[in-house]
Image 1 (cartoon, helix red, strand yellow):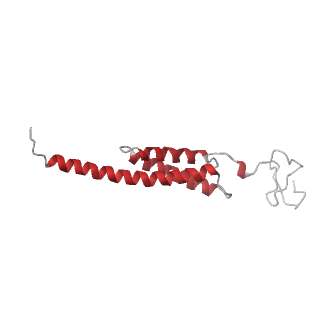
Image 2: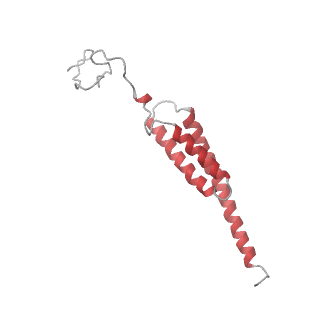
Image 3: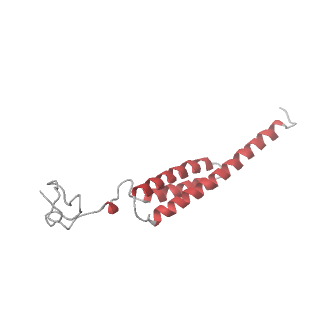
Length: 132
C-alpha cells in the first residue's frame, strides 16, 4: 500500500509511514513512540538502584572495593541510558549517575585508606618485640 500523505510505499504490517510518520489507514490510536519504550535500555530505574547500592557499599569501610565495582556498573548503565534516549534524561537517571560518581570517589578514597592501614598494621606486627 502507499501513504496517503506523501505517496511512499508502506509495508502492510506498518502502522505509520516510514517517510513522513503519518498514521496508515487512520490508526492514530495506540501508536507509541520510542520515547515511551521501557525496555532494558529505556528504563532509568536500574541506574538509580546501582547508584544507591554503589554508594552504600562505598561507605562501608571494609567493603568499599565492592562499592567501586557497583558504582562502575551504575555509570555503565547511566551511559547506556543516555545513549539510548535522545531527550532530557529523567531524574532517576541523573540522580543515579551522581550517586554512582559519588560512590566511585568515596570507594576509591576508603579503599586507599584501608590498604594504607593494612600495610601499617603488617609493618607494625613485623616490628613487634614479642615472640612466641
